[in-house]
Length: 107
Image (cartoon, rainbow, N blue to C red):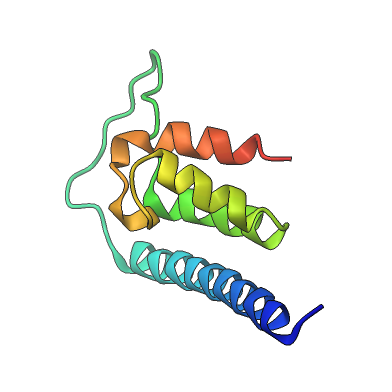
């Protein structure tokens, strides 16, 4: 294999590693802020149907980082482009559920 191709592969691997490290840092930062935040008003619990939980950016980022670490970096990038952005932070939050489902189906 030529040295240029090896360097390109190394650059791709480093980008995937950087994305994974960023995802872990974001999740840790969100956990830290969630631990310090206190609810302003008490929340009443309904006994009927529980509300559907909204999927957060951090949850999607964690799933995508996991898939990237499993070797699906190119597929993750393709999924991001499918939902209209080169970066996860630029994707519409309404698309998070579908993006996460598509990412979890990668095998």
